[in-house]
Length: 568
Ligand SMILES: CC(=O)SCCNC(=O)CCNC(=O)[C@H](O)C(C)(C)COP(=O)(O)OP(=O)(O)OC[C@H]1O[C@@H](n2cnc3c(N)ncnc32)[C@H](O)[C@@H]1OP(=O)(O)O
Ligand SMILES: CC(C)C(=O)C(=O)O
Figure: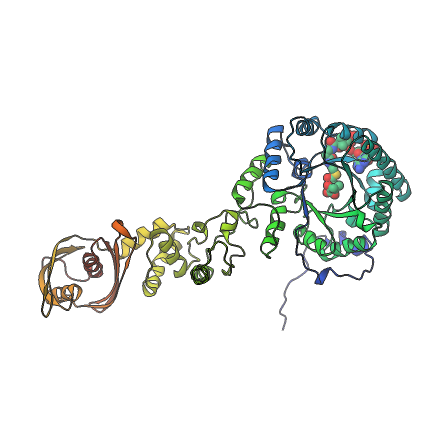
C-alpha cells in the first residue's frame, strides 16, 4: 500500500548542510539521557541586554528600570543589565544602578562587552561602585565567523582573546568584587577542541578558583541541530573543562529551530549550572530561550524554580510594556488561552478533574491549592500562577455538554441534570454553528431561559393539605395557554398534571429535581422538570424563592405551545 503520497517540494533544501558536516561532535560517554533535574539552575535574565538589542525600539531608561525591578521582585539574583560601552543609555542605566543604590546586596549585575580594550575600559567605568559584578566578554569562535566576520585564523583569534582577557583582568584588579564571564559566541558551531582550548586558557589566565569561579557561557547563538546534539556538546565541555570546580558552566540557547527550551533543559541534564535567557523568549530573531517556560516546566515536575511566577499576568504586562511586543495567546504558561479548553471531551475531563480534585482535597483535609494536582489537560493549577478558573472552559461549536454545564455551574450555581445537558447541548450547538462564534456564560444563561423557562405568569396558586393528598388551585398562563382550575393529587405537581389533563393536555412528569442556587435569605429553588407532553418529551426549568412555585413553573414551562391556545 502506498501510505505516504508526499512528493518532492520545490524548496531548495539542498543549499543547507546537516550539522555534522558543519561541526565535529566528539564521541562522549553521555550521561544526560538518564539524568534528572532536581534543583533549579542559576537563572540569568538577559532581557536588558540580548533582549533589548533585538528590539526595534530599545528600552528607554524608564522601561529598563521597570523591567529591572520586576526581575528583582521575582527573585532573580544575577541579571545582565546591558552593554554599557555600546550606548549612552546603557551606560547611564548602569551608572544609575550604582549611584542610586538600586541593587539589593544579594544581586549580582552582569555587564557585557566585546573583546576590545576601549570597550572593556568603558565597561569598567560604568560599574564603578557596584559591589557584585560579572564582567562578561564575548568573541565569536566558529569557523565562518572567524573567516568571514573577524578575518582571523584560530591562533590569531586566540591571541586576541587572551589580550582582551588581560585587559579584563587588569580592570578587575581595580574593581573589588568583580568576577569574569567568557562567551565563545556561536559555541555550537565551534570545533569542540578549540572551544575547550580557549575556555581553559581563560580559566588559567583569570586564575579561577572555587571561591572565585569563572563563568564559561556556551551559546547556541543560532540553533543548528536537534537539542541532543547541543546536549552532547555541553556534556563534552562538562567532562573536559580544566579546573572544573572553578568553572560555572553556563548556557545561552536561542530558538531558531523552536527548540531553545529543549536545548536548555538537555544542557542542564548534561552538566550546565547556569542558564541565560529572556522572559517570554524575547531576543534576536526567534528569541532567546524563554525563562518563563523553563522555570514553570520545573515547577510542573515538582521542582521549585526559585523564581516567583505567582502573578504571571503582571510579569507579562511588564514584559509586554517594556518590549512593546505582545505575548502570544498560546505561549506556555502565560498566554491568554493556555488554561482554556474549547473542545468538548477536554472540557468534560477538566470538569470531572476539578470535582475529583476538590473531593480528594476535602477527604484529605487539605487546602485544594496545596493538594497534589491531577486534573486532566491542565499541566499545572492555573491558580499557581495567579490565573483563575473562570477562563478554563469556554464554549464554541467544538464544545460539548460538559463544558456548557461547567459554565452554568460556575457562573450561575446550577447543576443541569445529565439528560438536560444533552438536550441543551444540541441547542447550543445550533446557536454556535450558525454564529461561528464563542458563547459566553451569560449567553448560555439567556439561551437556557429562552428554551426552558416558564414564559408566562403564575398569577395565583394555593395548596391545601388533605387527608388523601394536596388540593391545588391555580391560575396561570404559559405562553399562549391559560391554566385555570383545581385538582387533588399526591402533591402539588401531581395535582397540576391533573388540572392540565382535565383540560385536555396529557402530561406525565418523568423526572423532577430541585436544587438551591444560593444559601441564606437569597436562596432560590431551581427545578428541572422532564415531562412527556402530548407524546413529546420536554424540559422545563424554573427559579423561585418558593420551592412549590418553582416546581409548578418548571412543569408549566414544558406545556408551552403544546396545546391549543385559549382559556381552559
Ligand atoms: C550574539 C550577540 O548578541 S553579540 C552582541 C551584539 N550586540 C550588539 O552588537 C549591540 C551593541 N553593539 C554596538 O553598539 C556596536 O556594534 C559596538 C559599539 C559594540 C561596536 O560598534 P562599531 O565599532 O561601530 O562596529 P560595528 O557595530 O560595525 O561592529 C563590527 C565590528 O566589531 C568587530 N567585532 C565583532 N565582535 C567582536 C568581538 N567580540 N570583539 C571585538 N570586536 C568584535 C567586528 O570584527 C567589526 O570590526 P571591523 O569594523 O573592524 O570589521
Ligand atoms: C555572546 C552571547 C552571550 C550571545 O549573546 C549569543 O551568542 O547570542
